[in-house]
Image 1 (cartoon, rainbow, N blue to C red):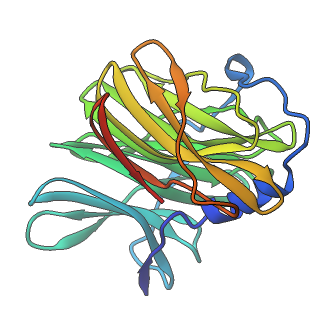
Image 2: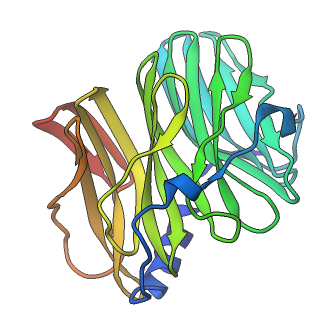
Length: 270
């Protein structure tokens, strides 16, 4: 049975980060010493069938080119399906072996004949970031940065693919007992960690970009036990900065998706 889950891990992350609020945060990022995701040679292909399938994201570049991604929760493998204008077709996708597997894709962005999908996998100790690229023929694992290292969780939630050689991915990682927003950029040859504002208890769940000098990312940051506030960050071509955003009151407030036309025209929902 297939179902569609919107951020199945994010809700858990919000509560966990809020519960950890007040813990001393370490450095904002530690990319030079960060762990890399596996190479394509250490991945296996998802099976053709499963008893419990979950879609987490869908994106399209035209009426005849769309991708839906997620995971086989029973088999703990990634799931990708393609719409060709007539029907949906299951397409094999790599799932990192690791010790526990647990590969899942949470976000996908599509261009003609190409696509990026991002998520996480477990190596048996902690979740690590995962990115896969569709080159028009097959999905391939591409190494990413996992700032949480071997003992702390890292994962990517969403991806924006605004040109053939440029893409952004966002998520979070465990940092000194609290969650920290994670931002990575594809430069045409590799994924690189990009510093985000050091907001304690933060995580990013949505990303939109329309040019090299304009990108928006949204999510939340913890303000107490079972409490969080919305978080919006903007890329101006040089650095990421936080932008004030309204909150309706106390409780759990999370932004999960953003769309942007320009630096002065964007919208976010949650």
